[in-house]
Length: 243
Image (cartoon, rainbow, N blue to C red; front, side, top):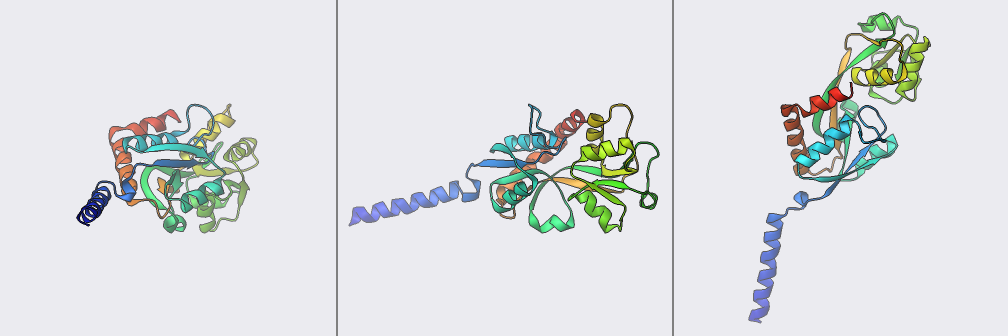
């Protein structure tokens, strides 16, 4: 009897010690980084995977978290982030419509949203309203912004490279996109002229996100790592490489 009681007490003590030393949310785990093809932020092929993925990978390394990277179609990637507690997306634009759908772990960058043209800069919404056609990618925050501003002269495309080619061919008058993505797509699609970017109409915060159930302690570790990358200039260097 005495031996059994002592054994039970030892088991309870070990359980308490393990719970204190290894809380469930802090147990080391493999973080699944899900991404979509969205250059230059996320690139599925080659050794260079895009600056958003590189930032996320380095932040996870500094946080002491192992990881894997998986590319999925856009809708599947969003659902996986929202439905699993060990998954992050390296680059989501923060806006009010999305606010309650994710855990906004860490701000990576702020991009300026501009009207891009092949000649005369467009520096105001009023100027843009007078244009016949403005190219914008379907299903994006850029399209949502212009729609909310009452624009009806929009021509939708499935990929930004399509808008770049349309602009170069004169099939649209302007192309609304953030400055980082526009410069990347234009440089790789149109080789014989410079892209003209107007004044920013708005800005978008780029975040690493998790689902609503993403562990708070892991989110804090990643956030601190990203802050250290801002401080030491690592993120700026990664961005410069993709300009």
